[in-house]
Figure 1 (cartoon, rainbow, N blue to C red):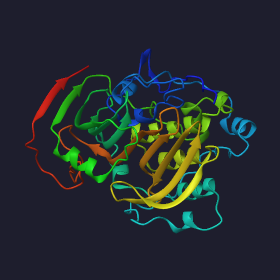
Figure 2 (figure 1 turned 90 degrees about the vertical axis):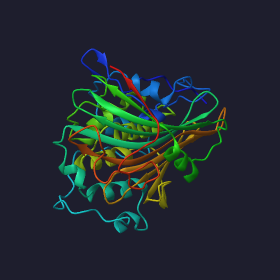
Figure 3 (figure 1 turned 45 degrees about the vertical axis):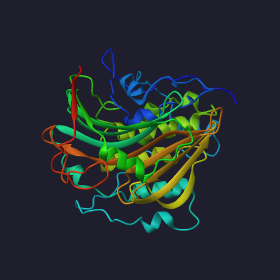
Length: 357
């Protein structure tokens, strides 16, 4: 299998590389980068997010390049805003339109994008801190690193992270389980404060056209590479986990995902947190990536990537548990959640505090 060319990911802010701490979206930042390919295999997820790379300036339309270089890929559509549903709470069950028989995977994703519902956090974007709570499993050198992370990020690049680590797993064939999540809840926390280094994956405001968003994620010049489907999938995941996406931005991200060559539909499924979504799969470049999408909100709930060679097993797994906005960096948006999913008002476990920036 030919190695895909190394291609840095992520934007710059001025002349300085964007800095992204912790696991977050960097878990999938090895677009062709597992062992045996051009690789970040020595990097931890923290390293990958602290060294996101320059943004791309692309003039060629991605849709045309995809059609020319990857025959199964649909063109990325221009922006078609989803209907506004008056701020209603999205349904808890998958949208039946997207599960109808006879639809292709891109058509299912386009159907979800056309009916994306607003969520309460879409109306709180004026608050100063963007909040994220995720749990990650990421391959390091011969082990799987497990981490629960809460992050508050201010537009000026400052913010706070609270992380909890479960012991590393020495088996690369590890399958994340509810027991892992229990270990997160039992672990001591480490708090780190940052100054001027927390930035979104792509500069804001995002383009309103899905094709332009796709061009920023992966250069169309790479559309003929075997790793391209993996690259574009990883770009969408990094975007969804790297910054808050509002109703229209979530729809645009789904349109980009629909353009991934060879994407497959896997039916209704539950993620590790027990949430119901629709499963999609991308097999490319020795990698199988499975995504779980909430068909009501268009949000990415979970993603897992496993590789087949040269050292098969888990490459990364991410649960996106909570996204929103707050007026301080001291508490999550209501309701506060523990790593295991239950409400929590205070935490008496040991805490270590660091300052960076």
